[in-house]
Image 1 (spheres, rainbow, N blue to C red):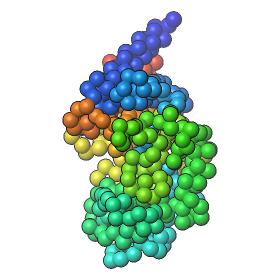
Image 2 (image 1 turned 30 degrees about the vertical axis):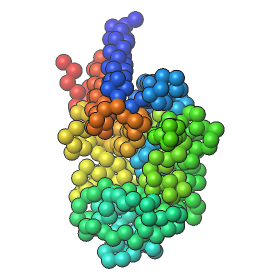
Image 3 (image 1 turned 180 degrees about the vertical axis):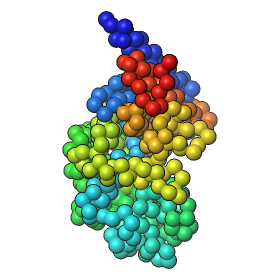
Image 4 (image 1 turned 60 degrees about the horizontal axis):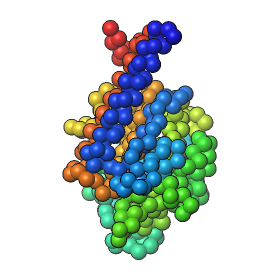
Length: 379
C-alpha cells in the first residue's frame, strides 16, 4: 500500500468514527430514536449508515439507509417543489419575475397582484410564515380558499419571512402550468429520471413497516401519514410537505445537483436557483445558503460560503457544498417523543458536527492526495 493510500485509509477510519460519534450522541442524548446518514460526492457515495431504531422501543425495527423511509417535512420544498419550478423556468413556461396571479388567478387582493414567482421562492412575498388552516377548513378546496385569501403582512420584496404558504402556492402553480397534478409531475419529471424509486407522497400501507413514525395516538405509533396537519388537509400532497424517502434516494438527488443540473435543467438555470437573492437574507430560490446567519447553524462552521441546503421540522436536513463536491444528508424522526428539552437546538448541533466532520474529511483527503484549492491549507 502506498503512503497516500495508507493515509487515506486512516483518514477514512477517523472520519467515519467522528460521524458515528456525532449521530450516535443524538440518540444517547434523547434527541431522536433513529437516524440515517449519507455523505458523498457528485460521482460517488462515500458513507451511508443507519443508527438506532424506529422508536425508543428496543424491539422496534432498526434504521437502514437503503430501506427506511422518513417523513421529509420541508425538504419537500427543495427536492420536489423548487426543482419542479426550476424545470418549468428552464423550459420557458414560468418566468421568475412574472406576477403569481398570471398563473394562479385566485391569488388576488391588495398588493398580492404584484407578488412574483421569485418572491415566493425567496420567501419575500410578504405572506406570514404559517397559519393553522387545518383548524378552519375540512376539505382541500376550502383550505386552498383560505390560502388564497390570506392577506400579506409585509410589502412584497421588503423583507424575508420563511413561509409554508409560499411553497403551498408554488405547488399549485406547478400543477396549473403543467396541466397535471403536482404529485404526477414530480414523479414523471424528477423522481423517475433520477432513479428515485423510494420517493413517495402518501406511501401505501405496504410501505408503512419501513417508515419511521413521527408521533403517537392512543399509544400507537403513527407512520406513513404526513406529520404536517396542513398537508394532511391538502390530501397528503402539498408544495411545503408530504414527501417520504430514504437517505440513499435523496443522495441520488444531491448527486444530480453536484453534477450540474442535467438531464433535468441546464446548468445556468440550476446556478440561478442556487444563488443567494438580494434582500432575502440567506435565501436562494427555494434553498438556504451558507452562511445561514444563525447562532447555531445546522450547516456547521466549515462548509464553503454559498453552499446550499434545507432542513425539515421532523428532523431532516440536506447540505450541498458545490465547491468541495460534497453532500451531507441526515434524516431523523426528532419529533417522535424527544427525551431532551430544546430538541431542535440539540439537533442543530448534531447536524453541524456532522457537516463539519464531512468537510474536514474531504479536505484532508484532497491534501493527502496532493491536490490543492484556494480554500485549502495543507501544510
